[in-house]
Amino acid sequence: MTYQPPVRDHVFILKDVLDIEKYSNLPGFSDAPWEVIEQILDQGAKFTSEVLAPLNGVGDKVGCKWSPDFTVATPPGFKGAYKTMVENGWLGLSSDPKYGGQGLPRILSLSYSEMSTAANMAFSMYPGLTHGAAEAIHAGASDELKDLYLPKMVPGEWGGTMNLTEPQCGTDLGLLRTKAVPNGDGSYKITGQKIWISGGEHDLTDNIVHLVLARIEGAPEGVKGISLFIVPKFLPDADGNPGERNNLQCVGLEEKMGIHGNATCVMQYEDAKGWLIGEPNSGLKIMFVMMNEARVGVGLQGLGQADAAYQAAAQFAKERLQMRSLTGVKNPDGPADPIIVHPDVRRMLLDTKAFVEGARCFLFWTALRGDLSRLEPDDAEREKAGDYMALLTPVVKGFLTDKGFKACVDAMQVHGGSGFTEHFPVSQYLRDARITMIYEGTNGIQALDLIGRKLPAKNGRGIMTFLSELESFANENDGEGELKPFVDALRTSKDQLQDAAMWLMQNGLQNPDHAAAASVDFMHLFGYSALAYMWALMAKVSIARIAEGETDPLYQNKLITGRYYIERLLPDAASHLAKLKTGADTMMSMPVDAF
Image 1 (tube, rainbow, N blue to C red):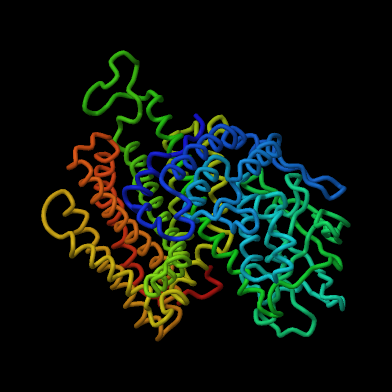
Image 2: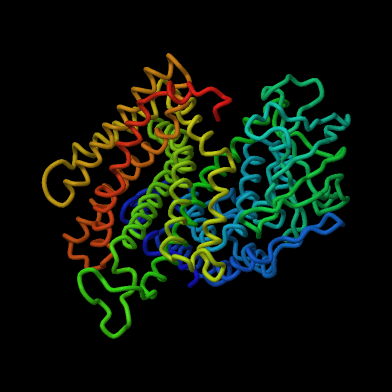
């Protein structure tokens, strides 16, 4: 079975839950009436399922090939698929029309990206990184640099990367050694080695524009002395086309557990010519434009792999015959019943289904805040949306990838021994998904960012506003009926999240180790609470549609899946709260030599 994009669920979230049409007065949204959105969803599903999904296994088995001439060949079919993607305008959906983009809301770009990532994660990293690099240039570069690079990068004619990590530094970028020496003409000589550079070399585009973090000679030590540079593979000529080859090379590829179709490169820069983006020593601030976008994109990858793995597992469970149902024969014409009749198989499938559908709603809801943080004319609403984006980005990245990987593990378990072989796709989904918990900042780093920066930011304004929103929904929808279990569950999870936040504020200040020890549990508690809100929103809409006479089974199935979430998954939030409150004492008391 190949991946089938969940277009109907996207429609449900965009139209029914988020009521995206009510934002038609805003820039970008005004260019996306519902008929345009439907076309994007339908055509995106067609391209990703018919073109990208069949190449997923090819990319995994063949991988990228490095040659001694420092070139990299992508897997068979990738070049043709990339060309089709560029011709159809998929890469520039939400980019600035001034540079060749379509200027549509980013939530629509994200909807397409979920399909693309689920269909072929390794392939989708190439355009994803290019888009992120273009956004960083758009945010921080001079008009001259924007005009030179963005018209080629926005539509995907040229690729883009970000070069942060070095052999001696990953998360701690203050340790980086790559240096930049002024040439005297406004350009710099960039020298150093960068590792784990996704898409650092490939054969998909005529040029690759590297964004490189480096330290200008004489700059302060640590992160305060880091600058960001554009360092193209080929120096643009007078007409803006690829000209002279720059002094940079891919000197090797990493042998990886997964994402074999994406080139993970070791990049060597030897007096390569680069141009400063923004002001000296402000590189991290600009690069975080790309990194924050990438972190939401990585959360999307966790969701995408979970959904693809779920689809494969559900299909397998319907077809695989093993034993008889405990409550009587369900397949009298066969030698055994399909394994989907067994409660434990259903447990694993429903765990994933409830997560995937809740996570998709959470991702889209958060992405809409991102659009509103730029486009909303009301100052207070724009500020609120910005607070939410800052607060929720580490939750989206950390929670969705942790749980997305678990979904892939469960999908393999549903397959039994078959899943451990390469005859079925779940092995690849599991291997590909594992990196999402590591890159763009490990999930432990996301949790530290959440409790150390995002939670106390602006005197806790973001978290207090979010908690208030949950409370308001619960109060406004209190009462009896089918919605009551969802409201009750939301109120309980809101109280747990508030309790955890208060504990962190009180105990984390006294001993930072207490905060750090609690951070991952807090991130997961936050994720569970956010999904409880999403399921309450989806349940409310579904109940209303059924009352209006809707016969689409999606709405009734949403209520069943939502009830499963609050009965079987949400109780895990309480265990995270309990663990969080134990603090760091036992954790930190173990002597180092005892490990």
